[in-house]
Amino acid sequence: MNFVRSIEMSGRARTTSFAEGNKQPPNPPLGGMKISSKDGNKVTTVIATPGQGSDRPLEISYTDTRVIGHGSFGVVYLAKLCDLGELVAIKKVLQDKRFKNRELQIMRRLEHCNIVKLKYFFYSSGDNKDEVYLNLVLEYIPETVYKIARHYSKSKQTIPVSFIKLYMYQLFRSLAYIHSLGICHRDIKPQNLLLDPETGVLKLCDFGSAKHLIKGEPNVSYICSRYYRAPELIFGAIDYTTKIDVWSAGCVLAELLLGQPIFPGESGVDQLVEIIKVLGTPTRGQIREMNPNYTEFKFPQIKSHPWEKFALERMSFPNCSTKHQKIRVFRARTPPEAIELVSLLLEYTPSLRLNPLQACAHSFFDELRETQTRLPNGRELPPLFNFTEYELTIQPTLNSILLPRHLAESNPTSSVPSNSAEANSTTQGEPLASMPEPANATEQSPSNMA
Image (cartoon, rainbow, N blue to C red):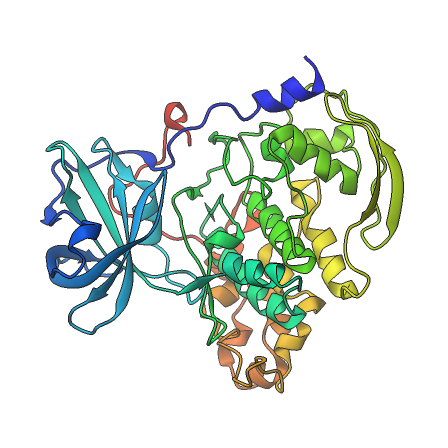
């Protein structure tokens, strides 16, 4: 088997992301009317369930419905709740009656200032009497990091480093939280980073590919959007960890610094070629760390490329064009702390990548911890250090760095003991905190791995 074929075979099969392997209670309540973009001015009243807390159904009404997004997952609508006039996003997805919806199960567990909030959910019928749709009513955030980055790119500018620090810090904080619960997002990319441009608040969204990872249980390798796929996924690993999110976040950071994706590629082969151009050819030991079952080692031998320097090399890859290429990974004025952080995130060996809280504690974000730092518009920074007591138990040894000195002195929770049950529990090699599964939930069987 040659190099190209072995990589392409690693990502052929793709399964739906919603099948948790849990039987869905029969006949979920159909509280809603059909949502149609043609009757946006009508008031729709449904029986919904709160996203968190009580399961007691309640009546909600919304109006001014219009389509703002669609894809293979379904359709997203913008609507206005009638009682408070609050704008919400309603994500409507076809529900397989045989299974619980994984995205719903996960989102009901999450409550964090950097994760989009699930306000309500309800079921509705479709045109076919057998069709059942799940509707997730989410808080509405107007922009995405992707749109902001495109705006700067079209102007032939890069995003100011102060914004990059602000956005990436909040992303890492959200990842630290979900990873502490054993949840892997599996689709980190700029499009899934919601942004309020006025306040600077970033919120992670779209948990349609997310999964609670359990050591020893297989997962599909064809997951995560191109450009942001970790190399172990390209190598076909099915026992990966939450460190695939860390790689993706590193790609996002590099993209914001560069103004374009760092590892573009139309296929797994293209993706790996771009990675090898910078990181060099992975060693056999690194490949074993990424996927112990991978046995094809016929790779072109390329030396690793210093992140901050120029290189002129003749690069030859099977089934790819051979060419001389002058590479500069980052611009000359890129802060060295930013380059160092990228290099610590984009590591072949998953266990050597920083975890999200370690990334938050990196010196690249020190400016955010200074009392005088403000947004470019003069406003105060959004809440960045309002750590809950739970968050401070995830990796207590970092608390002295994560909490700015002026806040740590007045925050008694900064000294949460490290011998708590949450701090000592571990999963996937990361310091994790235990949290109960939703009622009636069971883990997915290997035959339904996704």
